[in-house]
Length: 328
Image 1 (cartoon, rainbow, N blue to C red):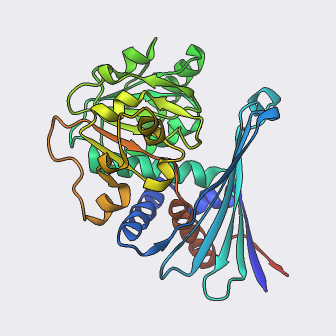
Image 2 (image 1 turned 90 degrees about the vertical axis):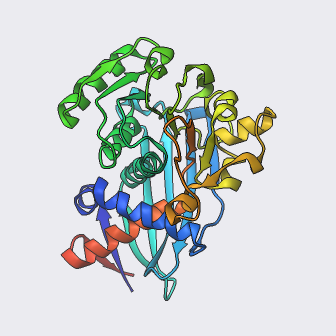
């Protein structure tokens, strides 16, 4: 049996934001049509080292491969001179069940597919024309989110807030040069959110940051940080105030996401959720229907996203003959 082995640099050369967005869009549409097998998430913390581990898998029906992904975030790593994120993807032949590829992507595919889901949610739920984008958090995912958003919307400007002002300032400088839009750092979360057309939260926060009264008519919120039961970026009133709450996977968000906190607070019920993102991608439910709707996308990250980008990577690697093969 031959197993293809790809390192991070090779993976990066095989898929970028545009291809990832197309793959993730198709995957959510397949999920909405019932054409995917998606088991639950395995997640646990390593509290002694400020670590968290997530294992996700999925099979998109009709595709040649299925995948199992491990991704970890160890938030003390930067103090050690190491990246906070890491991970790998196991890709299996869907015909035989044999291992087909090992993707040592170091978490790149997780970052990429999370940005793609955020862009898809914005494409389906944000106004067609947007002025200012607010970003809370100045880490790597805040970069992937804005880069992917640029594939579906062209904002006039972007403002960022981070608890460490120096990080926000560095982010603004870097992204302005990379994206070619005006970026600025804000002094507070309230300052960055008020007046924004799109709000992106990408932090590991365990306490609410965004308050409901800060959101104006027509605002869209994409929340990607709450991928564990103790994480939270939005106060529950944000979801209660929204005209439409969309989740990537209802049963998962009831355990892990912003929805989980709103339901626990008694401000929303599962029946009050407008749709899953797959319903919108498949066209079985509409996204934004008016300019003044406030919309929220609660994205906890699902295995179909990982399977989608892994399928692209392996297919491209085979086509271009990239990577090495091991006989096992």
